[in-house]
Length: 441
Image (cartoon, rainbow, N blue to C red; front, side, top):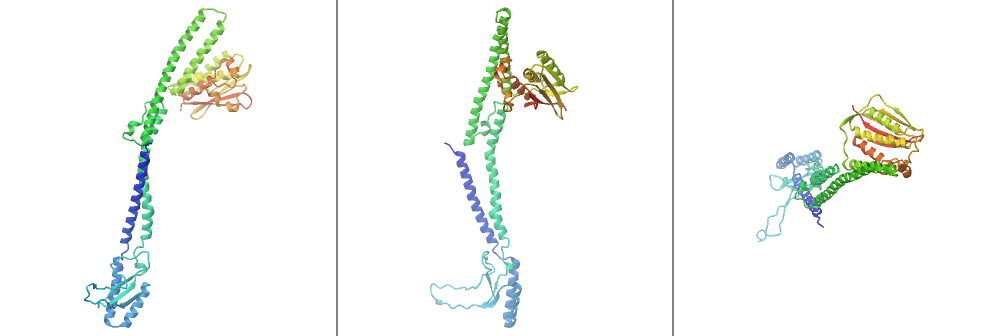
């Protein structure tokens, strides 16, 4: 299996780690070395002490030199003295391997100092060539006071900044193709079956490139499948409606003894096919049916008249405002959805029962509540009743001419006009359907 991205990440992380270690090490050495030298001000002070010691030694006043050394030590809080160094060489001067020896007690002013050890001694030769002023560097003159902070920045802040920059570059390298894939996936889920990723990732042959190719192959297959289903539904609609219409025409002409039963079955088959095709269209296309302004009050009154005529043994009580307009909606979708819900409530209410329809207006939406006096629905079935072909009491619904598609269709149609519907059991008896619809401002 090709693991190009894996090796690319391993190599890049290894290289950046090695480069970071090398950079921090070299910078630390260089900066520490630069901080190890005495400043020019401190050098001037120490050279001034050397000149004063030279004058006092030249004057021959040893007591004054002693008192001056005591004063310097007290002032600087350090050790200071004047020494005379004599060297006796064992090797004869004329020996072939002879090298002149230069003995020193302390460092010269131009030498670097150790920042991590005790304050060093500085030796400054006097003018007679035999004596030297030796002084331990005072604490306040020691260089490298900023070294702890600098060391902390070099070993923590600098690696952190560089790793953040590297992580950002790595993130962009990985997230760019993933972002393209996310965009294509979103477009595909919204119905753009022509969305592809490969053209956006030209030349990429790692795991992400292969993922893009796999997505494109999947999109091609799914898009082809969806298109074939669309054609199938179209063909099914044409092939089924035509023979059903012919059957109805034949039944109108041939008055057989089974005429009423055949006509009823035929109409049920036709309604089933039409509802199934409508539901499949709503599920596959997810259309936005929002191009009309609907008079909700007038629509509910018309539906109430039709259902009251269909169920004369039930009562229908309306509680509606004088006028209510639903903007950006669809009269056909609302009519079918509300009619299915109200007819369902009437069908499941007992003879003499009452179905109540009320409308409550809120800020930017209204709530239509349809309450029946039926047997209600088990709590675990309140969501399932909106699924296609689901029936709580299959024998009862089938006998009433239902196929379990009415509420499923109503839910999809309401979603098409930016509405929603949910069910809950009434506290006393029956079922309440709560429909939310957006209204004009």
